[in-house]
Length: 309
Length: 309
Image (cartoon, rainbow over all chains, first blue to last red; front, side, top):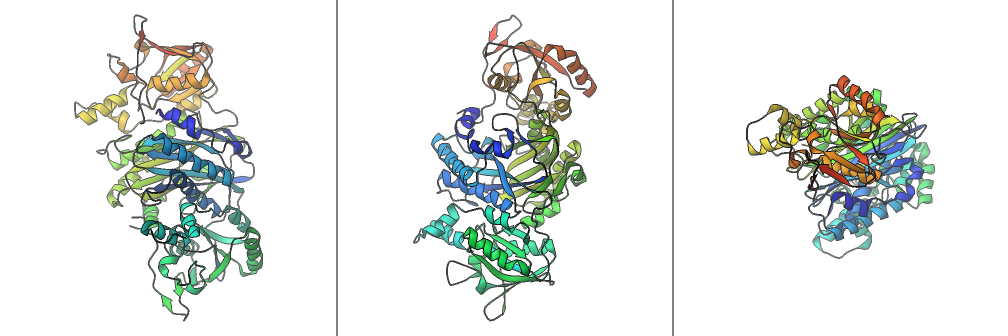
């Protein structure tokens, strides 16, 4: 099928109900999308590629692949404390299988509806299946939450449970007993957008846990030039046997963040309001080293999480 | 090599000299890039994927691959009459070959320097070589040039020469006599940014010729609900034998645009000032059909240009 017909048929109206509220003047169908600028707001931009066999399973439905690829990209806006505004999509496909594309577009629609943002443009090409999603958000001028702003002697907290997506992925690939909650964590992760927005002004640094809790927290440490003491037993996991593999395999898209101790009550209240568990797992310090402790306060060696190459 | 080290080493400073003038507050190294908004300006966004064997040759240098992939994306901003502001990059690589990545980053730097825009973020993943470039530009509020605004009885014009990139690609793949100008047109195309900016306010519709002159012009016709008469002999080509294959194979990244007749002198003057040939190749009409004529004013059949699937 002709690329332009394909786009028109399946992609031209995804999330179009949300175009006006995000100032999108020109959407899919022209050379480029046009957005009128938001006064007193900064723009927050991120781009993420999902590849078959690396970021999603070949056996997943097209709808789940679409949804997951979009959430993975959006998660970076959560980690910036930003409001999502719109997204665009570069889709590479081995062939123009209409049934697959139709199902894929359903995943996009669900994503658009869940986060109330429109798809405003993109590109389709022929090749190995690959999905690159660009997301744009807004944040009050000067208020985006960075990785580089954590201070010494602050709390280190995480949202949700760590390792559920890893367990889900393992169950899917080994075809062992399937736990719906684990499977859903992998197939249809949530971007913690509402939490990111609420943490804006409270958290000193936020990162989303895509590559593994310790590896991602270490990026905060490096950027902020602080160290961290983290206690394995405190890390919230869906199973009682807390292994380093479970906490450090990535794919969770929960938020790991630092905050001043004085904000703890406020932050826990936000978690209650949003119905998202929030757990303190350690504290920052001046050492510039990330150290993981077991119950006996012994240092544990750990690998460095997901390696991209 | 670790993804984060890789990014830091090769990509963290590309075009960084241009960050400030484009209001980029946070660039590569955080979850997302942050840009303060431009008052009284619209944002213009586009995304393009380049794939080995489809959009570039396996035999090309990494530097040329990088440069070409970026220009291909930027060309959509030229067709919107926009000023480029910044770009981000999703790079999928089969392995982390440092020499290749280093050469690739040189192509990015050349692109950043040529168009004076910074690379502000992106993602690297492992897989079949694929490059997705997102470009963002700005245009005075309400002034972006669309495809949908061509009117009946207007001039149809093109910039540059059509078919040079096709000839260059043919020479490269057939290993026949190599003409440097043809080869360069394919390897290092130019995005007609300056021309697009100058045409803003004069051209009623613009498209960049990526898939073939007739196919792309036809997109203007469809969007604008007009027809077009185009004269093959008038189309500027680097060879005297004007075949449909030469004019309709794409890859030129020249601009095809429509304009009111009263603007012709102004437009030709702009071409002279920018040293870009501009040629009138036909006129629009009310027929809603694109017709190509030969020297004897006979209608010619033509294929529909590059097919993506």
